[in-house]
Length: 419
Ligand SMILES: Nc1ncnc2c1ncn2[C@@H]1O[C@H](COP(=O)(O)OP(=O)(O)O)[C@@H](O)[C@H]1O
Ligand SMILES: O=C(CO)[C@H](O)[C@H](O)COP(=O)(O)O
Image (tube, rainbow, N blue to C red; front, top):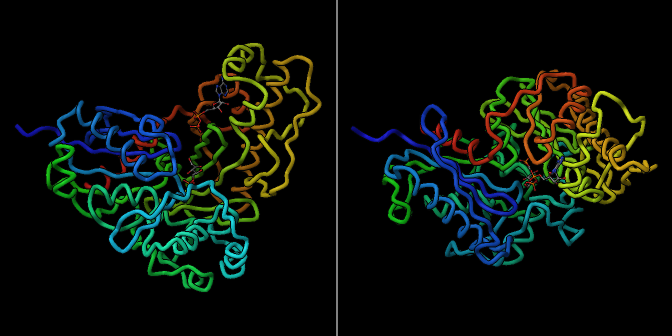
């Protein structure tokens, strides 16, 4: 009897790689992770990304029947890029998703030529990274997920989600002409397909290294943010997902795209629909500026989430906000600080809940479907007091996510692609 078919998702996050193995019913069979710090630690070095992926993938495959794997897909941090030479070898280190462009002239050119709705605007523009990589001598560039997938299947191809912040137009489904006018050499940009499209099969070398079957398919992946959304099980227009990690990100499944750079809002084309949303600088880092995780756990039971403090905070880890208010100078507002620490934490939770509610409101004002549910992932999701407080403000159902692992979402993408 042949072994049950399996599908693998590989997630490359900020600090390391994870792999998740599922079957055709979406049941999880194995997960494994590997920290970049265990491989030398330079999170900009693509060889470190690959070492972390290799180790997580090998560990996950060690727990299952590797020869039963039918397909795999990769997600990566959105906007992280690497330059490649004529021989396909990596040139230098990667440019990370949050590395600001050091040359204002590049950003000016993008600002002049990109349509106002493009996701390529701003100091961390992916299009600016493409120009910087060309200056380093790159003749091709790859997003982080594309490059990892290319290690496994040899193809140079990207997906519409990873390409979005580099300037890809997901509505027209092409690299737009304005990129050339802004200084990007279009020949250096990879071909782009929809996430979930089969892009090839594993190379003989990858099959041998990991014990995969030679006909194992490689499926175009996505960004870590979109993968996290898919993992939660949210699937209807109006379903929202909030990630309460270091930052606060909000995504809403929509039947139409919403682009509003003036509020930091962009939309990913995703499985025939749109994932509209953005990322706020508020979130866990703004909490850690005042309390440790242990202190938050100790203080939270003293907070009554059904009462309001009457304080109006906008907690940020440093001045500057991206979404739902885009203002690079927006100051953090956490005064007057109550003498009681539990009351202070209560007001911080309320402030972040207010930003989250404003984020969903903005999306609705701009034409997104009405919010019907919010699933939550990230470190803050485990705090029941905060969840209750948020539920009062959001006023919608807050179902538990099916999974909060981006790798699981990417495994679902591999499954869809192979079906
Ligand atoms: N008890 C708690 N209540 C609320 N938030 C918490 C608690 N413990 C930790 N956090 C927050 O969780 C965040 C980490 O979440 P995580 O999803 O691991 O972040 P990352 O974005 O780095 O993956 C921290 O920034 C911290 O503020
Ligand atoms: O900050 C990030 C790094 O973990 C994420 O990549 C980003 O917030 C998600 O972006 P996208 O909405 O394009 O998936």
